[in-house]
Figure (cartoon, rainbow, N blue to C red):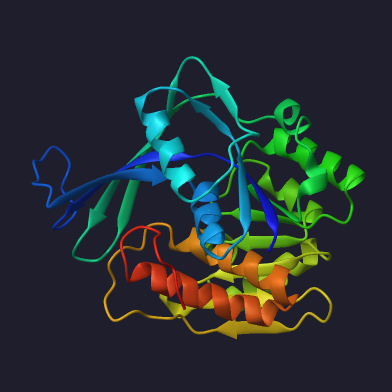
Length: 289
């Protein structure tokens, strides 16, 4: 299968499940707590590794207790960290997540005390071994340099970009990649209708496959060669257990499907199935069909 490089962050997630979101200045009992590795790009790589791809993480970590926990988890999934930058001081990014048991909403408070992975780090990577490079939509101006350099020196290497939230000036990345993966939250900043959003994006971006996850309503896509709109129903598990990371899992399905079949229609179907299966279990283990 493919050798895939993911550029982004890994986090420590502290997940507290409660029975109803608390009011300000109140006290609530936590029903359940789980501490695990998170981070959009590493979540996607963990899923891709279970689909038999060789995955490499390019990011920044520090060798403290929480950092060691993250690296241990990635090692369990066979994620290679040789291209990461380890720093001596700081604390790994930490997300404090409140899961509301009543409606499955997620409220996330994020803390970070590490530098971002930059262009100087990226240039050191031997990209000749890779079949795909996937970026988080963050650290915009450094990411622009990475993608421009990659396109200049490795023009045939596919590039995907996850756009989970709107960062200042993130739009300058859109015209530079081959696959754009938008979250529902981002899409709704432009248009409440997924299809209309994709058509709006096509006016700005002519060269990329456009994909948009739409939660429990499924996923939409717009092909690059014939501008055909694609839709796939969501795969709903018997019981919703854990939606955290469903979007990252969806993105893994898009990458895997496109790499294996070159068909956006098949990739969209696989992405919806994978994301649904993930929602029916806790964490990212044993993602089957």
